[in-house]
Image 1 (cartoon, rainbow, N blue to C red):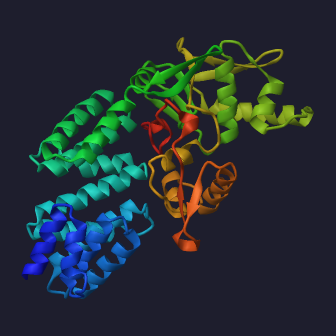
Image 2 (image 1 turned 90 degrees about the vertical axis):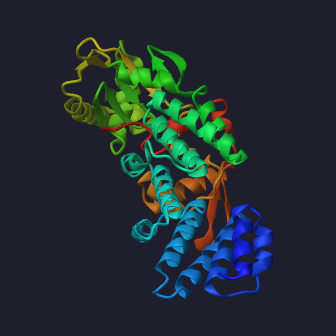
Image 3 (image 1 turned 120 degrees about the vertical axis):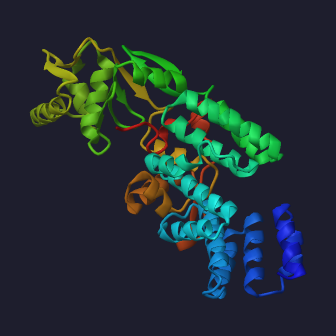
Length: 409
């Protein structure tokens, strides 16, 4: 490695991107292209960074597998910053295997943490936990130790393992402080603030109460019958009945749970579930059909009995009933929660994270843009979406609205 390349690498390691570029800006050999790509990424010029890193990976010959693998890892980190998740992870996995086989532990660790962070953004918590598990208990350098601890904390928070999250955040803050990295220290402090902020609302018998994350966890562990409007399903102890793909049934469940221990009127159920103002006998017949379907899904957990004016929810085993509602009601809570991280998301990445069609996401974004709640930057394939701070959620954390925020098994 020549002196200019060495000096540029040292400058990048110290975070001095401009000094690195001064040394390699006019060079087009593979190492210089790779260093220029990393420098551009540090400066926030992600599209150009990705282009340079791809050029570098192609320029390295077949005998330079280690250098190619490092380029792949750097490009994967740029893709993470750009919120681009449509590509296959096979290339990153192969690069991580190459790095581990060649003894480049630092870059192999970086590849693993990039993959973990990607999985967390997509809500694939089980896979993220599996990939993170080998790092538990290992003596890691301070920087990756802090990043790994923050990932562990996020995984624990979104799975409502509050004690584990607190322990991971304490470790992350200590490692970030020792490493002297303000951005990581701020991230750890911000994550700790989530524990003190209201995360949802509990609705019981007409009363509304704000709950923090540890109180949400306690409610879920209490054995109560919880109509969870954050994840759209019914939780009863270890039992989980998902209703995200059956919105009419979930709406009926929520109305019944909000009315409990009293009954819910038929006209109210019809208006809320079918979004109708005028009600006739055909709607009442349809309501009976849908109530029958909901009754079958709740078998073993609760019954639904007809009353003179409507229907009443009857939990088994003397369970209490509660509704866990998001900070504010609305159809786009999950989408806004993803955009709340301040990054610019593509519609394809949002669709992947929300397990929805890209067209559905595009329609939702158009509605939010018309309301002034999101804005687009770029054109056509390079278009990205941003959201301002969530004033609608002021004082609340939106972590329960993120994909797979609650354990579903």
